[in-house]
Image: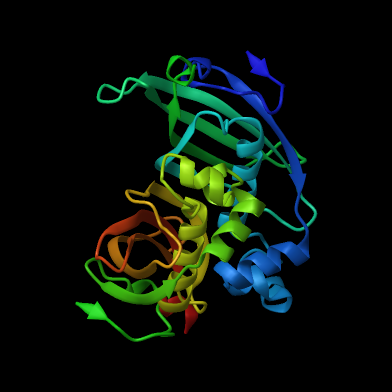
Length: 157
Length: 157
């Protein structure tokens, strides 16, 4: 089941394991890669064109945190719902299996892996979701498993 | 063993399990919390002062990705070495056990958990490190386990 609709109000009951949501796509340019990395991850292969060309990736690549943050934006706009989101406990197993380079276009999908109602607070549940970003060649550049607290519809109504 | 020195050239051989590095501290303000979240994590409790006051945290809190990215900067400046860093495979188990609020000052420490030389490429090794950020009250607000590829000193010389 793939849900292509955007800006849907989703509650705990809507995050059914197996649900996959198309979270759209975005492109990433060299200037923004360098600007983000200067602020948060100033390693030579993220911020210095010449050093990057001579370095382990043969050119500038995006900080994994930049790719992750941009993927998060797609999830906030398409998967996580402001009506129900109570924040995240954390994230398991972020992997950046391939570099992201200037000019890449990444597509994001999110799949519900597990959903369980809180025992201590039955007005909410805990959702585990797998997010995946793939580049224009179909290669995976990011996977992560998020752990989110979400209000139930019955609690909200 | 705690290493307080900054901007040290570290190689695989230097990342000995048990080594803890003081990665310094930083403060975080409301304007930058909102600016980051507008770009990457526009949930009401990160970007909208009024909605945040009425929301689950009773006020604006930093995006976990913002806290993580700022912690990364401290690690790049104090723990990861541009002389040896070959990038990261990923991260395991990010946890944000408490919210980060405007005005908080966070201190970062990194501890080497595991170091093993690559079998396929003996000029490098894989380091697993636990990063922890604590606030001005000594409470932990972030933990993560990073997995980094690092050149060995013998390969560099």
